[in-house]
Length: 242
Image 1 (tube, helix red, strand yellow):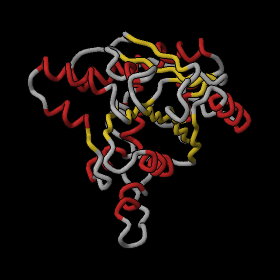
Image 2 (cartoon, rainbow, N blue to C red; image 1 turned 180 degrees about the horizontal axis):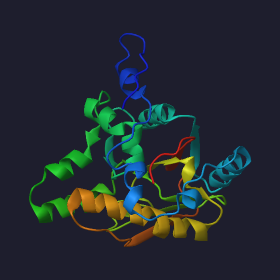
Image 3 (cartoon, rainbow, N blue to C red; image 1 turned 45 degrees about the horizontal axis):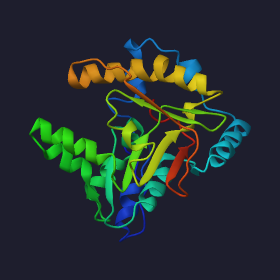
């Protein structure tokens, strides 16, 4: 459920963004029963020293980090990162939904050009696939992540590459969102988290949503960003997504 914090009159964007994180149908808590995952191992909140060490390690890889205390703060940070009228594309992300980005996009008070709406509105299968390929090169591409190593590497995975294709180079600006519950000690642990935690939960979601299972077809590891200010991670002190 939404818990509203009322903003000053006239601040329309504040009215949309000042919300608590919400549990959705496909939040991890609603998928755990049949997923058979080790929650204690793969969904732990780090202590403050680990968190700060991880943030510094990410920044050392030329990736900007915005550390947000709540989903509300994170949503405001994401909105601030996206200029008026920008072309944006967002990948399927439980974290973005739990933050309330779908609600912000529906309001769209900044006049963004929503590439996702263009893709989903296309009924011709071949044309829709072509649009998806082009969408990874959007000016601003938003995505959740699957794991973050304490050494600073950010790991993502998906089935087809419709999200991962944007990460290394295609998107002009990459905006990533993640709860701190995705921090693990090493890159090997990050890859294991993808296989042993994210995939079983995503498999449950896909079966409920589409009637078919899922698998990992692509992995991407962001090791170092070459382009200044291209990639920003909004890291949230809440257990969001999976």
